[in-house]
Image 1 (tube, rainbow, N blue to C red):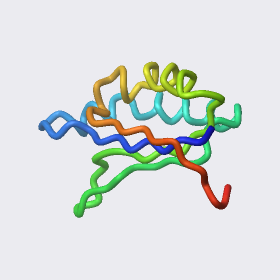
Image 2: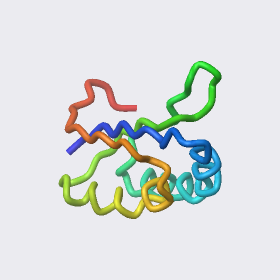
Image 3: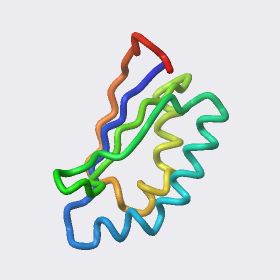
Image 4: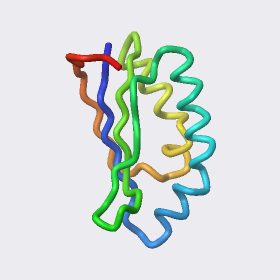
Length: 96
């Protein structure tokens, strides 16, 4: 089942610092998801100054429970980077 995740970072003065401190681990985890066939696409949401303020992620998991298990262990969640997360089931018309 395909899902779209929209996740916004915190808005406090340390938000970008938290993101950058766990970014490499997050990216490495995304590479593992891609190799396993779970990651469709993802990237940063930017503000008008082109600073990272969140993320959008398209994933494919067998169930919402599997997605939630991955999400609970993602460095952006455990590192308190993503603070406003929305997960919606989707059906992409065109897969990459």
